[in-house]
Image 1: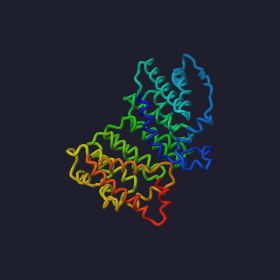
Image 2 (image 1 turned 45 degrees about the horizontal axis):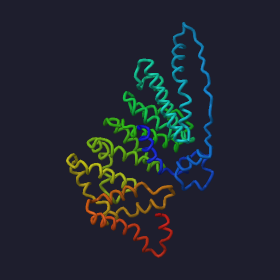
Image 3 (image 1 turned 90 degrees about the vertical axis):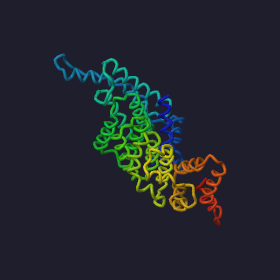
Image 4 (image 1 turned 180 degrees about the horizontal axis):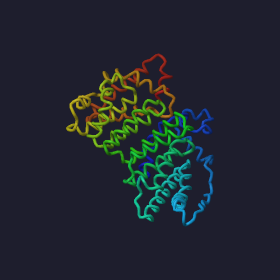
Length: 374
């Protein structure tokens, strides 16, 4: 059940990734894939049997040692615990979801078995667990087949099931791995960080203020990269929706307050965050300071506010993308949830419709613009 929940969260995130920004080169040759959802392409290759992850037999590891060499004896013990898990890492690269999930569960079962046999809890200092975390982070640095998704899902489930692992050590490992891997270009490094941070958030372990501050700071820094902006924005929204409102106010609102106060400066992603934040804070008005209460009074479906955001919202329908921008679904949910009175909802939706669809229909040649909206 926990793995299914994690997989759903990741699927919600990756459905907005353009194939051309994410897929490995050998899957990008077909220009028809330019406008499709990345996971549709991956699943297509899985069904065709084009998965390039080949079955590999496990190499035998024979570490010679003598009873007088304590160091070699320790090495043998360490690698004896790691070796059985190697096939499971290969399974994480699978395009088929069932194979990937099987590999994740077997990997975690192995870790638990090692911890039990050694009468030691799985924690951030345990050799096998540290190796596993670093190996999963390395999977996040590559876009080969299902590696990035498999690695991040496994990392998320590991954090969820092992509360003794410090989430901050995962961030530290990730920075060191990217710093030492010169083969990872800027684009792949951005995706690696994005999936790693998403794994932390989805695991439910980003709870303490210090951890939230580091994760939020990293996500906001990543938002500067346009290719991961929607993915990162959705991850920030998960923090807003799932974390304690007091911490969200002190960490997220403090960092975004200046830009969220002025709808005229909104990008589509900021509008998405504004809607999510208003929904979360609106459920706890008594805990909100005066500046947040003033922010809650903004009605994003009103014509005056829509006028301010018109240009940035129009921008989203001309982007080369497999899905509509995340902002659209958030705005429609927000508009339809604006009141319990159907008449009020109808009025608010009418304003939204008139500004975006009605205005296009009134143009002399609306076909091309409508095609984009469809």
